[in-house]
Length: 427
Length: 175
View (tube, rainbow over the protein chains, first blue to last red):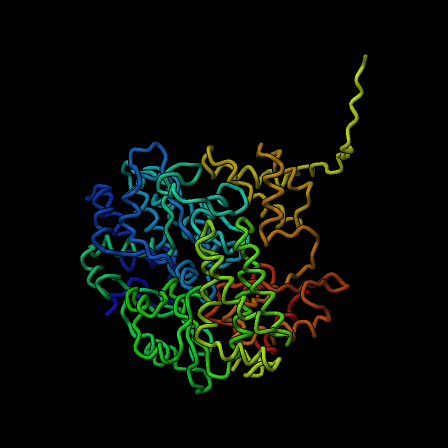
């Protein structure tokens, strides 16, 4: 059963994050195999064959991303994105806490494939235990020659540098992450050029998410074809789905793509809290368009099915909302967040996110007008597509989808000056 | 004939002096510098700001200037980073900085009650510090504790699945 699991293939104990236990379950076998029997291009081809798509949210095919890099460049960088901050998402944190060596092995395999001498792991500044576990894992790996000069006695050398962020959601965007890694404020960059061409210090750079890189050892150990056979064909593999909000048993579940969202909520996460009816689900982190209970009924967790429903699997963070919740106040929690995290570079996002939040604050204070709701519907169209990065779109999608699907509740709030659901956010 | 040029911009006195770099910090800075490849020296801005904040609890303009001098990068770059990232404090805070997540998953599991309970227990509002300098109360965005909500962080330590009783116990253990 555990052989089709990439992550949840061992019992989590006080010791399961250590090198000894990781080796016990076959850890660093893929690295040994790659360094002794495979050329770098073989590793890249195996990733292409796996069909693995980036797990940070955008879902770009990993092998292709690696393929864009000019391997003859004198300096090539790898930056692992451990700046997990999409509300509803807590999977990378689990990997860092419970399987840090799996990430280290993945970083080494990617570095071997790409010709990287210095790899960075950009970890969000708030993470405490994940940082300590990762640093401990790296110290263990260095001590036995798995990281550093002439790894396993061969010609390949690679250092891994853990770099702490300092509290900025936008730094999870890859070009913003690179600016931050250069010691500057995290303003996203215009693309093209893409990081694979001009990235960190203008050198070719691959930016991959923690879950993505931690999947690489499994693919190299078991073969790309075997990974491609997991889940649905067009978007293969397993994913770490985090279920939060109004469920009996919130938590992280590794499931193949194409798994039923309903089953994930009602069976795996124990159903809606307090036996309430389901009202809505945000399926892939706070930025993804919300689904009504009816839409959740038959949907599966894969890119195609999500796209048909006008949303996406994003970062795998499933946020469950019970009947009786005030959608107006809930949306304002999100507009407040995006207004706070807009970096300030592009006017449409900087002004628009704040404007949407001020409108909702006014509505909640009982002073909204019908014109406010018209503006709320219109502002996202002025933001989307007019900004350097996707934060503007991320801020727009919740507003647009909440108003389209729960518009009556917003109209009620404006008409009566109070919530249809007593302003409740909890069950 | 001599020309008199009258400057309309008053000269700004150089009020900010770089903080002297003490031996402890210098040792930490040097150790970090040895980890990064030489071409990536400017990357040290954030790590060094973290070092200073860990030692002093906040980052002054003089500290930013000290880091700029040490790294040989423009002072504005360090000052900009210190002011742009939300984790860097620009003024002294309480001994224990209590940071409560106010984002969506925590809100659905009672973040507002957590904030209200802390405000009443500490006798301060969000953004304030207790008169004895022990506690500063803040709200923060998603801490990636959505599966264990509601959550807060006291200095670096995470506390999750909070209830009023748990919060009281946590506060009781802090000096």
